[in-house]
Image 1 (cartoon, rainbow, N blue to C red):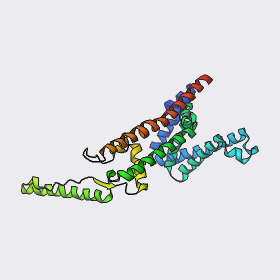
Image 2 (spheres, rainbow, N blue to C red):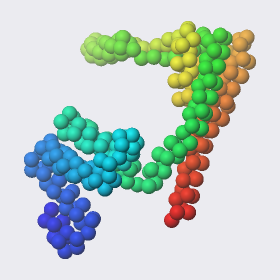
Image 3 (cartoon, one colour):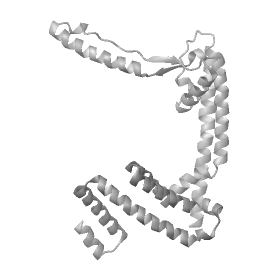
Image 4 (cartoon, one colour):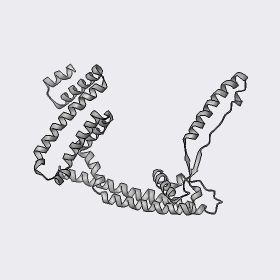
Length: 276
């Protein structure tokens, strides 16, 4: 800390000030503890942010504008929300301070372009997502009508978890007893099988399963469905169903959304380069 102070006095730069502040914070943590240090820093942050907020209001003429313009001023709302999270961290719970890390997005132009790449063409992204929902809905209807017996999803419930714990305890106890009797092989080895439940007995459950499992799996809905035998009557239909879901929803529609975001980010970067 003394070295940082000497560095600030001799070479007054922003990096030296940051080093001094960081060393002071570390010294306070080891001196008075983390919680009092966090409370002190939170109080200082609230005071500094209030001064900053009042200066912004004075510079922008907030009191001379009407309420609608003030409510649509992003900078004003941002700093007001910043003060709100500071107060929540100070009086409610310190975990609210973690949300202040998003300030790096507001300060960095590159990260702002990442956010704008999603919000600038938000209408196109929303419409493409609506198209994806329509396709998932249609595939859910087909699955409900013809393949409801194939929707077997593995689940883990509390009962099976407690049963597994009891089985493990019995297994350990049986092993110890069998070692004493010289019959370790008969220690009661038990294997708990995977519990699967039907998830397409109703149309709403079929839609939820297709939306949840189909979009999150790399191979589409076919990754979680039962693997059919090639001798079954509906085997060709299942192959076509799995392939159509994979090509239409996973490859085409999702990549359309990604393409819109990537193209928008490239446009924003080229516009920034032109301005520079």
